[in-house]
View 1: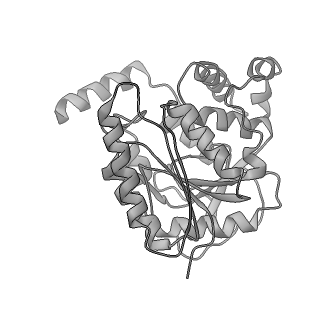
View 2: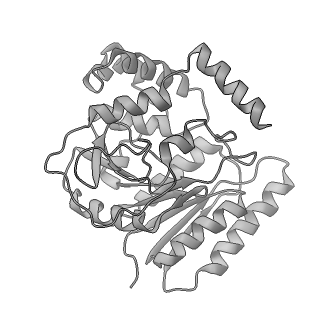
Length: 304
């Protein structure tokens, strides 16, 4: 049976990771598949050949009944604009859908998890995204299959066009909203408020798109669904990664690989799990102390 939720696959030059992600998508036989790729960087013949190899592999590999739409750009836009405009292109054509980058390898249960919750929460204006990534290090939050968070991971996720339509790549009102201290309505912890005020300000000068999405959800009081097991393996760490060259020391400790989710049990109430969010901030986002940085360098030296 065909998988009816539209899927957007975002690609670039990495054939090895794309093959693994595409083959996992192929198992689902989606009825609607969208493929978007950035163009080659200027004067980079290797980019041209690599992008063509990725394109050829995917298009030749679609051997099921599927409506395919593609957006292969001729010129390079950079990670931030290429990804965000690709998602905008996707949601100009669908009501909701799944977004997978070429280095986010989903567990098979990820698809059914997104499918059920996209339908379950489609009329809820508070729930804005469904994340496939769990970074809780094995700590189960609550007694259901998932919990609610102010931190929506974008390593394999899903959302609705109604949520994405307010996305602002340039965060034009950021300074004004920071002066209004809007983050205090999202986070009770002043350390998190200060961290994100600084991080969002810096993000305006970085070639990225995900901080803008976080800002967008917080601005409109949106929250995310996070599974109680990790459903996404980031396989993009290495020299070919745009923003993920070195695997963070916390990654393996917090993801614990991927696991089956099984039957989906919904929470009785929609309420952000602050304990989970505080854990994530302390273990993932919070700037490392001098001692932690020294330990990190020693660990890397011992591994080399």
